[in-house]
Image 1: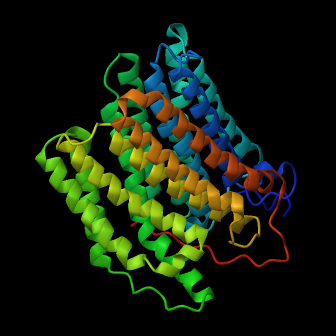
Image 2: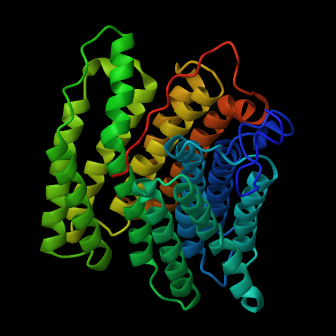
Image 3: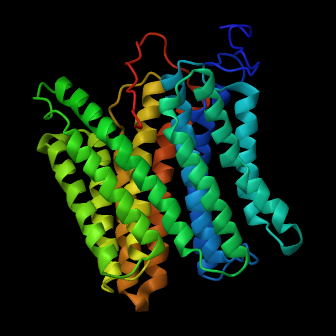
Length: 414
């Protein structure tokens, strides 16, 4: 593909670049790599700060910085990498690559650095550098959808815009010494709702493909009524939780949403999927959404601390699903088979152990710091294992021409 063929009507070079850096040949590459490296670095910094070995973002607040860098640093990078592969599929247009992609990755990286060195005198500029990334990518997606006349596929733009607005609110609350808890719950809810919406297509599609290869019967056809009820109940539960995390109404709605998630998860489950690390990782992560919602109900009734359900959802459900999606996406777009190596098979279990230890810390005040540190170490191990198997694929390996790519799954956001 020459330069002329890689120009769109807007004049932005894009496509599956075959020259230049492999890392900038497709949008998922720099963001999956950057997200994983930052997941390791951010939690390492947090462990050092929590144990008094390091001071970070004193103006912003160390706890607020920790929450921000996972919810608005790490997670958006994974989301953007994922959308870099799916938006071209929806619109039929070439994906971003080359220097424009490098510029977008640079802006994300600048945001991470700026949040580390934030100071009173330059706080506004620092926060603007961090904030601009999500609106900029939302503009890119809007442009693609508009030019391709695929307005019905604009749901990701709503998610990106919501996260950008929530990020702004988080910054304002943190810089004024306010409570960032509501903004953290709001951002986490966006990711949970996104997984809830896409899982109805994603998990059954991948599961059925694997069952067919294994010579087993397919799953029962999708029940659209259950899918709609799950999404509506989760949306209502999230909205109530954001504004009123305590009280019987929050508990009731969270239990209803969790029950519907369990019904849907049961329809997808087959004991044989334990033989597929990818399918098992996706289904376990999805199951943890229901467990997290039960945790929200328990918190609302005063049975758990306010951070327990948040970490269960953030680490076990959302990050677990992101890790599984990244591993599958990388292997698909580099022409590798979908069988996971031992490194990849161990990465999600390490993440689940990290979630378990983080929750245990809330029940063991005398050993809080050791449990938090242990949880962080297992989190780091999960991403070190992930990078051990995938960093080379992201940086050096183009798609192998001998292998015919499988048809990408079109995830309907409607």
